[in-house]
Image 1 (cartoon, rainbow, N blue to C red):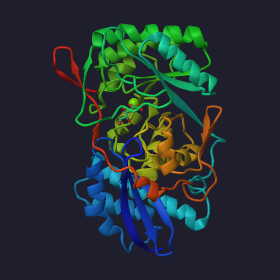
Image 2: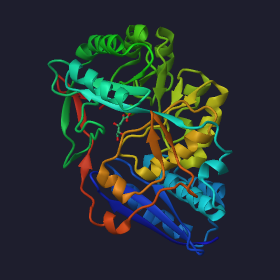
Image 3: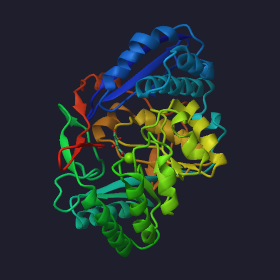
Length: 402
Ligand code: KDG
Ligand code: MG
């Protein structure tokens, strides 16, 4: 099953996506998501200039060997660009293998460990009433879990308050927009939001919150402690996680569960977090953390330490990643939850897919392979448009983590 062709397809049906399409001599093709928000063309070049020439002629069935060849063979290992490119190849090869044996990928990963995959949606508002209404819409739509974000009073910007009701798209065309941040205003405000949400919706709905790397460990400890009465499903990305050791301090101060990892690209970013049991959910994804093969290794390590998975699933991860994530989620034993930010209708038309949502849960479908494709003619109607995530500054002008 030799690889005879591989190509990168870049399109922007509402936002930018990079897709790798690998074809074998039998005419089977597989897809891999290679989208790295705001750095899309770097991954496209890495694939086209440095990886695709190495793929031609390789046996598509040697998934692990190809992964190791691309990882060890680069000499300079890891990093988001490299790992996103490797992820795309790995995902495409799993897709090809599934199609070759006419089975859905989850069956090749050990089979279904559950009947369906619980997902959470994004509710956000420019004030508490709006956020309450947004959570209500998700509850009415059947969601069992909802992430709630809200603008801080008298602050022009807050993470998570976006455009559109059912999807959130933070990247803006042009150069990165600047936003302002105040930890002093954020910390006392968030518990008031969740106090209200519990009052409105009762104890059963799972509530989540994304801090988006904005705090220090001791500030995060304070936030987690103040949220304990509202028993969140998780508090996400409380601090930037370059310093894994920083999570020890958060853990000492709160029993609010902690999730982290959407920007991690390998097990080396989280091995200490996992083995020290400083976190409860690992959010690494198929597209950025080495594909299905490497994500399984992370999950297997996490399982030993009572850490469950909760993969990133924002709109900047394409339907190809979403499909792969759902096959992984259905199969992996220590699954926790899957983020599901709906894509726009334009995106869904470009990437027809077999996965479905109903009553707060998803299923990858039973098509062979990943069950997702790309309509290349339609994709060509949406050319790449430069777009960037915002940056954040504290009120005195100091750069802060966005
Ligand atoms: O590209 C960045 C987004 O994916 C990110 O800001 C979304 O934090 C995010 C989340 O939890 O979905
Ligand atoms: Mg996040």
